[in-house]
Length: 283
Image (cartoon, rainbow, N blue to C red; front, top):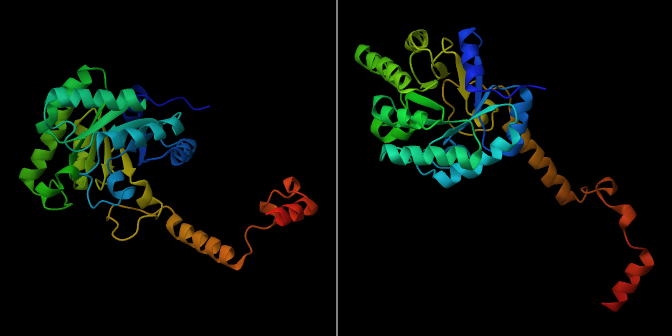
């Protein structure tokens, strides 16, 4: 039986050069599968706004929605370390707001850590959340909640000035107490340098192989996502196509009357033909 992952065991993995795996997850049934596969960490991402709710960005997601999805995941992830995303405007207003909402996410889902986007701009929030006893994963580089400020989902850290800014962000969130940082859409050489310079666990998503670990959106890696798929995604299966084919087969059999058969019916509990004929006559 596997042991529950903790901040200490994850940091030990980095110290020993062992890579850390992470996927997003938003429901109980999938969390059970992720847990059984031995994945180290789950991110209940506000990406659920796009993958589960059909929005074009993560911005509409609320605290209440994060809690509903998060508590479902935690029930299925007995051994996996679960990180909760703090949604847009749940921590930006004030340090007090950030601590209260981080506490709510942990208290109401029983997750293990929270994640918030931003570098130098959110160090006060990170420090206060950590001081309250809640582990924090930072997120720098391409931060989806800033999609409007960035003018789209674009690579961050290109050019010397921008590279310096991303590295300094990493050092500042570490100093504030973050134990992990997601590096999204950061040039690989820069991500590798950051990984070398920090004691935090670096998790890449479009950051190259030099990070301490990797994260992918579950629907992307399983081939469920339709339409645009980011360059950094590798499809490890084509579950989406299998799902479509299964739905088609079900639809065909229902319309043809070949499903259900006796094998899918409770034959032994059926009423006698005589009794049914009596009911037919009575009504």
